[in-house]
Image 1 (cartoon, one colour):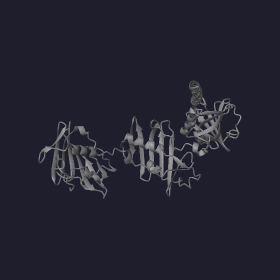
Image 2 (cartoon, one colour):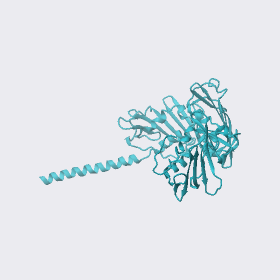
Image 3 (tube, one colour):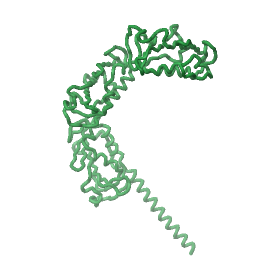
Image 4 (cartoon, rainbow, N blue to C red):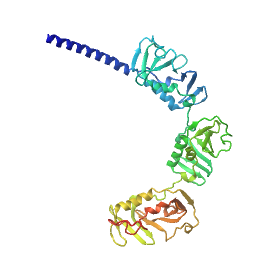
Length: 442
């Protein structure tokens, strides 16, 4: 009797195990099955229906356009997201092999349809029905087959989008390699930057090499200006008939893109001049676009290679502190001699190297006018390969926050920078002595 019971239990176990393995195999196969086998390049248009809303997207070369119910450039990234979702869509579960209960699953009158058209005679349609009672899933059916399956509910977001959601929000689609010139006309004057081979040149209001990184940054920021609202107002109502800011981007093919902007209260409106449609953009877009010439210039005050510096003299009314590099170590060679605190000396050089000007005075007639003299707080650097020392001199304060700075490396310029640059200098003659305590009083 006991053996019979054991055999019966074992038989039941084997039956359950077999059922489980077969069921799991089917479930796994279903989960791995993709609903569509798509080739993106063959899709030339997309139709999306939801209730009474109808949206058509049409491919135009490498980009997409909304052709119904409005005519506007489509956001290629959003379209790509839809096609990717469709391509990677996998079947979670087959719930009705023959599609006999369409009404129950909300597929007789689906909440939405997505149709991918491939030429005149070929199309793929997805019907989207109700949500599953459990799990993040939705019932769907391919238009060319009867079965009803469960898929991830993320596909629903695309039938809920309004026409404006499919629009390209960026006003200027820019690639640095295609740009030949940037012209800015704003409240602080005019700026013109032009490409010169692989580099950029500031042409107006001063002629000098532009900082390539700053030009790249500007292109990235202006190219990223996006519409946040389509208010449906006229150019005059948005004050764009007299724009406060104009940006003209010249392209290699001779085309020019002309963005105009205006402030009205706390709102910033913008438009492409040739299109004339007014959009509202984020308030920060104004600052991103309204750059001055200084923003494209080399504003780095101190540009010495730290590895080439062999000695430093700090000179002020209290006297002089001088350090000299011996091998990899710094030594104090003025007043009481000894080892220098290498960390403080290195920090001094690094902090100066990172300092940038807020503005530049070109061709100053008199250095004394700006407080630059032999009595100024200054640092004198002696470098490898040069008999001429490099001087960095702190001048008079411009106001409570800004101060004038001059360097012999750029004799024809006075830099205006943050007054805190003074704090980079040692505060007393012995501060750089190894083991010395800081005296915070200057």
